[in-house]
Amino acid sequence: MRQKLVAGNWKMNGSMQANQQLLENLKQGVTHIQAEIAVCPPFPYLLQVKELLKNTAIRYGAQNVSHESDGAFTGEVSAAMLVDLACTYVLVGHSERRTLYAETDEGVAEKFVVAQRAGLIPILCVGESLTERESGDTEKVVERQLNAVLTVAGVGAFSKSVIAYEPVWAIGTGKTASAEQAQAVHTFIRQHLAKQPQGTAVAQTVQILYGGSVKANNATELFAMPDIDGGLIGGASLKADDFLAICQAA
Ligand code: PEP
Image (cartoon, rainbow, N blue to C red; front, top):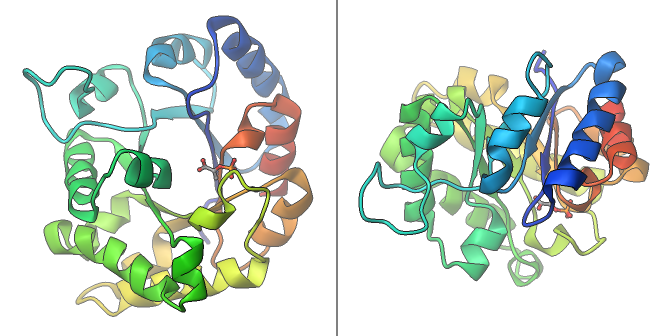
């Protein structure tokens, strides 16, 4: 039985005051929730979040990480720095990073490895664009994105990671993949991992989240699918009531 996980990706949103309010409300609301909960604020707020979440079961992580370890890389944040701030998770390969900042499959794989080596749990985001789905290429794209990590880290690396299937056409658009569409891709991901030498066990244990316009009114149906282990939530993670309702559904 895999533990459910609901992670909030705040993207480039928040302020000291808004974060405090949001986290105070979350702390009050999570007591009866079974799922594991995490939030991923922007870098400048990680220290604030660390303090506010002290002695709670809510975990936190970053939205990105450098593949470099230290040195002259202006504007970058290393995996060691995230560990220093006691982050549990880091998102790698979010579609906004892939499309707006030209992150490649290989670059994402490098970040995955560096994060994991430092002791973070990478949440690897994969997913197809609308054109790719309409051309029937969903599996090909997801397979390519997974293979980049498999090539450098092997299937065993997925035992200490999370995968988030996020169809690009569903992110921030209000269009959600149907529970069946999401389930089909999650099954495909498990099958692909199981096909690797020594991949059978990992394929069954790795948590695979769904992300893309998850709201309180569609979360129950999505999370009821056998291969969906929770969600990566963008917009709806910014309001405590909405996020708590989604966590409750997991
Ligand atoms: C995301 O940013 O990972 C995401 C799923 O966003 P939204 O829930 O807003 O579609």
